[in-house]
Picture 1: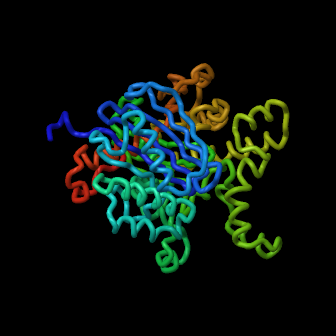
Picture 2: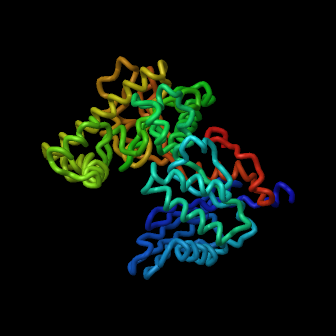
Picture 3: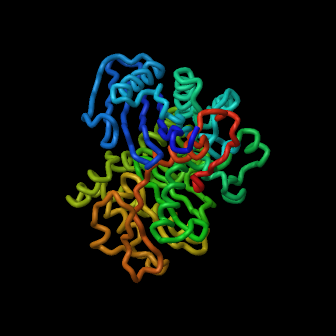
Length: 425
């Protein structure tokens, strides 16, 4: 097969417990051919929304279908049907591989990995440390393998980018035998985003990632920070689970672990009730009843004290991590804001660096107010440390890592070396 005739398309799947998000990309030019979502899988009100994009064979607009979709197999068959309507079906010879987002790879998977039975077994073994995510991710992988057993399936792990953390950053200070027996340590999440954004930040500065130290702030409904030194993660805010770290939409972030004992003993709450409290009823929604930063800012501007308190707590935690990771890195070339809040909430960026001029941080009000889908610098030229807004693109990163691994060649994919780190893709 000649280089020009090799397949260049990658289907990216993000399988949740009752949903499948997907994108089809052509890695010849990194263009998107189609995007879509299947939600409420297993219910009578299942819904599939499919959008073929400019550059694909069909320029038609968004299509939507509703009705029962029994399981993930039926969901992926429905996705295949929609893609086929645009001439982009799963049986296309132009499809090089399917890339799967997998939340937890533990310590074993530090790179994108071609899936085989042993890989599936290891992902399943990690279910106890990612009970909400890994089972759904695994269902998507198994279903896709059934539909296209001849096609390389590649798992790209949220935790992989963080496996470079030194032991002194990854370890908790608890009995080491107990920790090892139960795989208790900081793993970190959002790694695909942190890898992409840290690399793109270096590009924005016109430097090699190996020469740049970046603090990445991934601020969405879930939020995490990372300290990236020379392209390698050396610390991150999320831990054994995505609960640790920054204040999030519905998660508490950092909290005294004795709070859980107190709630059990004094409030009579069960483990499951405490788990739900900290993961689903805390963070911004617990503080003020809203987890949408736009609504919170509207309420702040109207003088709502609970919204103002929630915003201040959110910003206080952000500033603590910026300061802590400045100490970890020693030298910071840039602070990069990304994800829904980080990319769109100018007030969050301004407040997060306010008063940190001694660390070289500031934003230019005019630059910070600009809305754009492009990476951009929002700090003044005189600032000692660049403050940047770098839109994340996790699907493109997954596709790039997948394509780098299989090389667009479907023959012998299972036997290829498991290579292609995020910062090399």
